[in-house]
Amino acid sequence: MFIKLILILMFLISQAPVGCNKDVTAMSQTKARNEGTRIKAVQIKAVEKAQQEVNQQPQSPKAYLKLARTYLRNNMVEKARVTLEKLVKIEPNCIDAWILLAQMDMLKKDYNSAKEKCSKALKINPNHAMAHVVLGNIWIESRDLEKAAKYLERAIELDPSLVDAHYNLAGVYYGQKEKDKAIREYNEVIRLEPKNIEPRVKNIGIYIENADYDKAIEGINACLAINSANVALYDLMGIVLSRQGQTEKAIEWFLKSLKINPKYPLAYEHLGDVYSQKNYQKAIKYYQEAIKVEPRLGMVHYKLGTVFENQKMYDKAIEKYQTVLSMNPDFVMACNNLAYLLAEQGKDLKNALKLAEKANKLFPNRPEIMDTVGWVYYKHKDYKNAVEMLEKANKLNANNPFIQYHLGASYYHTGKKDEAKKMFEDVLKAYPDFEKKEEIKKILND
Image 1 (tube, rainbow, N blue to C red):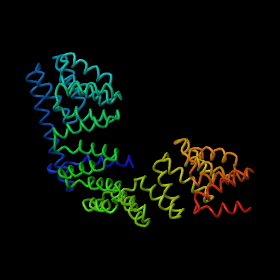
Image 2: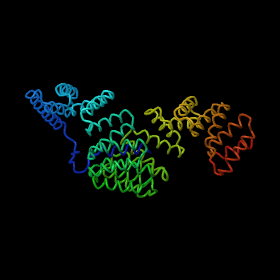
Image 3: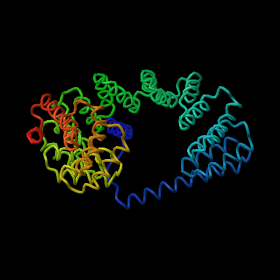
Image 4: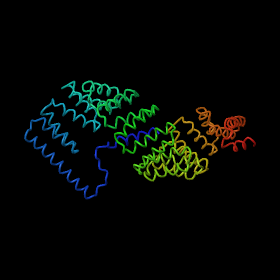
C-alpha cells in the first residue's frame, strides 16, 4: 500500500495547478506540426540573437551566460557546455558559470567533477547561497545526506527565501527519518509559495505514514482549494477515509474521482480494495475496470488473483498470478501464491517447487512463504524436508493454523504420530471451524 501511495503522490505533484490555463484538448496533427515549427523558429531566433551578442562583445561574461542559458532552454546541452567552458577561460571568477557547469556534471552523474566546480565557486565567494544549494543537491545524489543537510542549511542561513533549498532540505530530513523537521521545511515552501501543491502533498504523505489522518484530510482540503480538478486528490481523500474506517465516505470520494476522470485506474483499484472486504463480486468488477484502463497494473492482477482464490475460483487465480509473473518474474507473493495453488491442485509440482524456493530466496524468513515451500515438499512426498521447513515456519508464527496443519500432516507421514496428533488437536482447539478440520479428523481416525 505504501508503494501505491507514493505513486499517487507522484501523480499529484505532476499535475498543473488551477489557473495555469493548461489546454488539455487534443491537438490535431496538422496544428501540432505547425506549433512545433513555430516553436523551433522561435528557438533558432533566440539562439541567433544571443550568439550575435557574443560576436559583438567577445569578452563579455554576461553575453556568454545569456548564450549558454539560451542553449540550455532549448535543450542544446553540449553547446551550452562549450560556451561556459569558453566563459571561464575569459573570466575564471564567474561564479554563475561554475555553478551551471556543476549542475550539468551532476546530470551526467559525474559527481566528483560537479563537486570540484562548486568548490571553485565557493572559493571565489564562500557566501554564495546558490553554490551551497547545488553542492547540497550533489551530496543528495551521492547519497550522503549528512553533508547534503550541512550545505542546504547553510544556503538557507545565507538566503532564507530559497525555495529549492527548503524543499530539498525537507527531503533530506525525511530520508534521515526526521519527519518533524521535514514538515517544517515543507511548511516554509508553502509560506514562500502558497499556491505550490508539491510541499502540501509531501506533508500529506508524512501525515498518512504517521496515521495522523485529520491533518492529512486538512492538507487534502487545502490542495483542493488550489486545484479542485485534480483527480488524484479525491482518490487520496478516499484512501485516508478508508484508513479511518469511514468506508461509505471513502467510496463516495473514489466515485467523485472517477466522475472527473473515468479513465483514472487507481480509483477503480481502491474501490476494489474496499469491496474486497465485503463484496467479492464488486471487487472483481472494479479490479477488472482498472485493468481495462491500464492492463499493465501488476498489483491489480495480483489482487484480483487473491479474490479469485478466496472465492475458490482456482483456475482464474492461477491465470492471474501467471499474468503478474509475466510482467514481473520477481513478484514475491505471486510466486508464493501460485506455488501454493499449483501444489494444492496437484498441478506442475516441479514448477511449484521452483516458484516457492524462488520466493523464499527473494524474501527469506517469512513464515507464510516457508509454509508454502514446506507444503510443496509435502506434495512431492519429501516429508523430511517438509518437516524441517515447516518447523522453522512454526517457530516464526506459532498461531497460524495452516502451518500447524501442514506440519502435523508432515509429522504423520514421517512416523511422528504423537507429534502429529498434538499439533492437530491444538489446531482444532484454537480454531474449531478451521476449513481443513475434516482432513484432520480423517487423519486422526486412521
